[in-house]
Length: 122
Image (cartoon, rainbow, N blue to C red):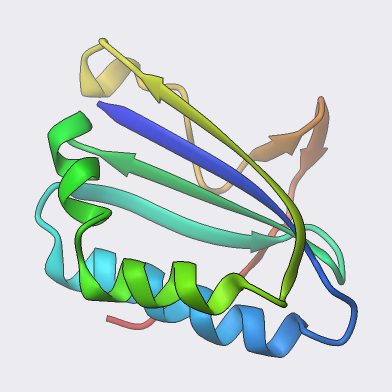
């Protein structure tokens, strides 16, 4: 599996626009990419968001980066995001050993028991 976590710091007042564009990317991935197993966008607070994506492998992620919904999302980020960081990791474990669960998230060692998941439509 190939896991990507992106942390976004959004310009104050741009939250609704960011959520709209992030939702379009997320839903495009979940609805059209067979190599995408999980894609969540989580609001940590008013200006901090986290996306967590799980793909079958690096090739599936590379295909994601070539999709129109991804390209649109990346283009629309300019002016909305003041900072972001990306962590990419290849996980070579059996699916049943994968330690991630969407009902129990943590960020910087702080558990987030009730994350605010962003628009989920498929």
